[in-house]
Image 1 (spheres, one colour):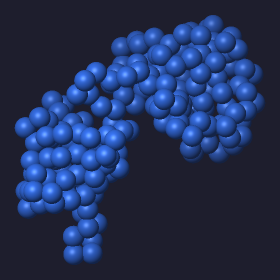
Image 2: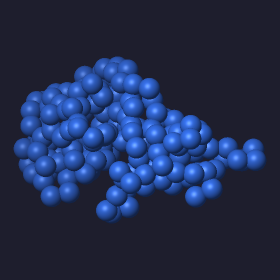
Image 3: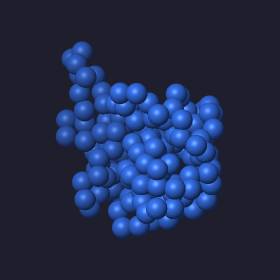
Image 4: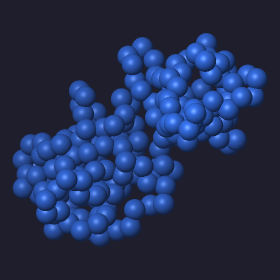
Length: 188
């Protein structure tokens, strides 16, 4: 077991937000690969939950553990972080590959008209005529815009529709109703 990790249960609303890449420096800092281009959730949350790497032959710890974060800051395309009880490079190396989770309730509030991808997954997509086009199963970053991946059934087979997540096609996102209204037809 890595010193400084406390066994803990994952919060009910835990979201995987990144993974620990490697140790950074000699004073226990570590480098994190965030899963978001805007890692504010990582920087603002002072307690992270870790699970061992998915493909670890022998996990360094069993189950979920909690880590008290002293500081997290953006650095180029990664995040550098330090934790209260991780004080040297060896301890930081023991975290390598760990998957990082934080509660969705700890995310900063998005700006008006912005959404966290995790909040869009599972929403029903309906066109202007009220026809259900499917459910959001994923989002793709294609450079200038994001694209909704909308899963649906057609002739008994699982299919996907790709709908650009831009104002020209998305009329409304109603999170409480768990629905996205779009200007899109099933044969596009």
